Structure formats: C-alpha cells, structure tokens
Amino acid sequence: MNGFVPGDSGLNRRRFVAACAGLAAAAVVGRPSRALAMPRSAGPADPALIDDLVAANRILADQGVVDGYGHVSVRHDRSPDRFLIARSIAPELVTADDIVELDLDCNPVDDRGQRLYLERFIHGEIYKARPDVRSVVHHHSPAILPFAITGVPLRPVYHMSAFIAAGVPVFEIRDAGGVTDMLVRTPELGRALAQTLGDKPALLMRGHGAVVVGRSLPESVGRSVYLQLNARLQAEAIALGGTPTYLSQEEAARVLALPGGYERAWQLWKRKVAAR
Ligand code: MN
Image (cartoon, rainbow, N blue to C red):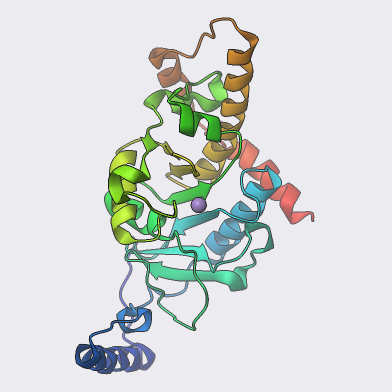
C-alpha cells in the first residue's frame, strides 16, 4: 500500500536476531514479554501526520472531549498494519516525541520500556476489523455517559451530527468479560468491542465512555466533538419534556453526501491549539 517497501536495514536485521534469541529464551522460561514480540517499524511516518496527531490530542482536550484520560490514534501512512498513538500521557501534554508506533497486536516497534495506554487494544482491534478506519478516538466525555447507562439511544438532533443516524451501539463489557475493572485491557476485550462497533461510526461503553472512528483524523476528531455536543443537546431536548424530532435517515444521508466533512472546523481547531 502506498508503494511501501519494507526496509531491510542492518538495524532491522539486528532486531530480528535479537527477537529470535529472546523468543528462544521465552520458550525456556515460558513467560513471553512485550519486548519479545517486537515488530518491525513501517519506517518514519509523514511528519505532517505526526503534527496532525499531536494537534488532534490537543484539540480533543481543548474541546473538552478528553481530560487527563482518553486517547487518539491514526493508522501509519506507510503501512495499514501499524498505527501511531501517544505513550501513556495526558492528551493535552502530547508532543511529537511522545508518539509511538504499534503493530495491530499493540506491540511497540521500538520498546524502550515506555508506558503505553492500557486500553490500546481498542485501537489495534478496530484497525484489524475495519480496513476503512484510519483514526480512532477513545474518551470519557461526561455528556455521553447518560446514554451509555440508560438504554436511551443517541439520535441525531441536527445536521452537524448526522453520522449518528447510522446508530451508536452500546458495548456491555460484562457480556464479554464478566466482572472486570471496566478497562479494555486485553486483545479479547478489544475484539469484543470491535465486534459491537460493527460498521458503525461510534460506540458507547457502558459505565465508561465512548469510541469514535473515522476515515481520517479530522473525521474522528470532528465526530468526537459533535457526538459530545449532540449528547448534550439531546439530553436538554428530552428534559424540556416535549417530543424531540430527530433527523430522518433520508435527511442524514443527504447531509453526509455533502462535501467537506469537518475540514473547516478542523482547520480552525488546529489553528487555535497551535496558537497556544
Ligand atoms: Mn477508558
């Protein structure tokens, strides 16, 4: 894809040999570690993509979608089998130096012992299941939580969140893992979550938060911002006591056929966080 040719540098060969040696050692002690599965890098990512990923972290914080927690990732531009995400750090503090490359099993290509997000399996397993997805956001926006715990479905209140018309399923972690600490901290839980997401643009996690996907960073970030706004507006509309009228499937389809997506907002948000 994209003319990517795997590199065969001496460094990679040394890594491979080291990995094999480690694997042999693991067979002896029978206790595999993260480093043993160290995959090969797809090569340096486009610096503009790294810039956008850093911006996405800061935009999501600026818009109140994430706080000290939550994360955003993007598929590597050189290989669909790799993705980029920050090491375990608050999104607002992310710089280019914090970005790590992981394979879809969520192993880092350069394991320097950096702490990684426990819930990175949300990203890896969605990238495996959804070739169309190029970016994933996970957050705990308080605005969406009421819809994650009541069974009241999120529905599109206005054109800005027309994508919600596709449906936003709720992931019940008890169905997949019984009693847990609520974190999607294993590949199995990640797979179950990806299965619940299906072909949808977003998913709510009961007692936890949400996952939003997109074909690009502007799309996953834009959808995250407007999912949150829609949740707030829908709750207000319901609280008013009338009978809200939501966008119909046909109206939503026409909105989504418009060109541009969230591009104009993305440019504005990027400018705002860059000015800090
Ligand atoms: Mn979480």
